[in-house]
Image 1 (tube, one colour):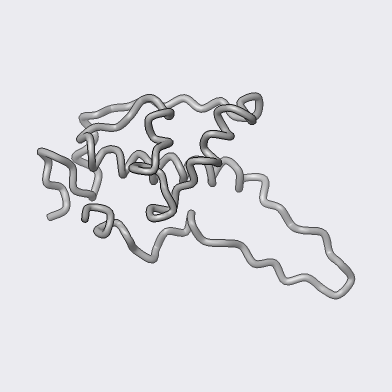
Image 2 (cartoon, rainbow, N blue to C red):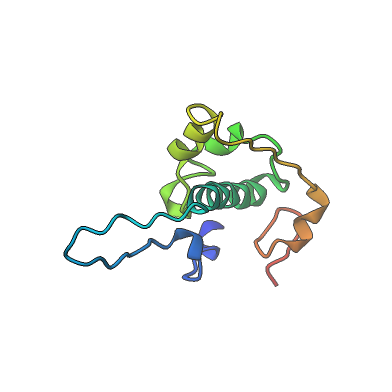
Length: 117
């Protein structure tokens, strides 16, 4: 399958965080960049799956929220992405600008463009 070509351990956007705390109940150390990085990583995973299937990137986020493009198998969470557009739309302003001629830069297999060699 195409997705099996993408599995690879160096995906730091999917790594968890571990905080060592003392016995005196230290507060959780939150990274203010984490929500934005997390959302962008989700979009990236969905766009890679989409471009492999459709041969182009999606300029609209909604088509990416289906299991075919965004699922646990590719490290994407459609529920979280939907929440960003619906529940948290006052916190995030997501705009996607697509250059579908740039698919030659993608290291994944794209229909009609073999870029994995």
